[in-house]
Image (tube, rainbow, N blue to C red; front, top):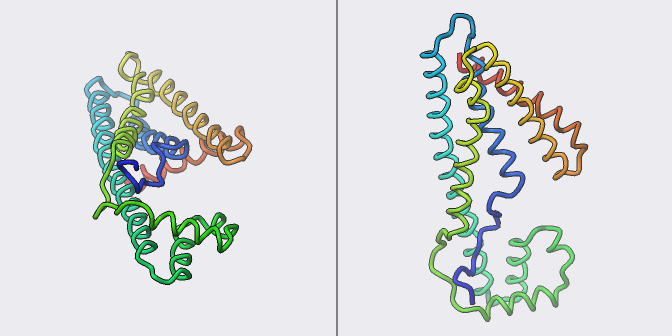
Length: 220
């Protein structure tokens, strides 16, 4: 019997999670670099912008990691409640309905009554489940991955400002890097979702630009 009979359905940063976190981090840092006026800007202005971008993504990385852990805990708690309900159900039909409600709809639709009964019996034969859901090492690892993706996505866009003396050139290179990263995120999303990768790459660049513009406009 494994130590964790109830596991979160969340994978440790599946591809969609990775793309979402990178996109979020990019948009956050681009709101800072995009608001930088290269005309008459000094090193102190760039330093302030970089520290603000790093601080913002650091904070949001922590927040996003905590939200990820909350989602995992809720997911495991829901599974534990469903397991208890199936095990305590005295009516076989009720147990099967509870099990069907906990399964993905497509999977539940193809299972026969005898298969439902067999699964319910196997669940009842398991040792007593824990009283409450707890986070395991995989969930903590996933939260760390979320934090790192949001925080580290700052650096590719910010590095040109760190190593180049010309703010104008640094801004151009930074924008090129941002466009490339947005395109790669969209390209990968297209591959995962069965869409045309090149089309999704271009769409992601447009979406990123629109979201950055909206964020800057609302941020005043």
